[in-house]
Length: 270
Image (tube, rainbow, N blue to C red; front, side, top):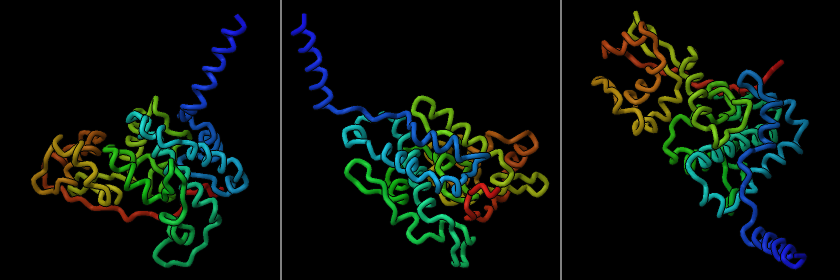
């Protein structure tokens, strides 16, 4: 009996020694940060600068992923992982440079764009590869084929989507994405319809990433006077239009304008 128990324990140890522990998809450290330092879609970056050890723990949590983990991820796990990776790196970039007080006249003084190399010079090591924000977004998030993730990533700016006060979870990622999307497209500062003027005003994120929406949304409805990108975007945002707003779409001659992107830092200021 004793020898059998020892053998079982040995096999158990050997199994984990050879295969390693699977990646933890609960994102415990990131959740602690988001629940404590996010309120009403904005981030208390000033407070987070006093918790750099917690931020480092959240970074290590993401960087604990192995090459074999990444290869084994199913689609919901990929959606959650890469979105969380982008968001923790945004926090790292801003906290390491906070307070921001730049002098580039093209952007607000506290903008993430005032940080030299913000999107290209700060890295996470994921698997065996060092990755910056630009790489994560364009090489991993956008190729996932879920354009609504643009409403889930923290761009570090008021023009981006509201920051969620929880990490993205592969077990509920679809409902989280749907909620983020609805909140974004029902915000008059992001999508505004003027039926009398037959005018639709949109966040410039739809202009920048419009082509990403074509695959999922273009065939839902076509407007002959507009591009594929515009048709796809209108098909998405139109799902939340009321009857008066939908009347604009029926005329098909509506004009689309884009709001300037607000690069001011999405921080809690009081």
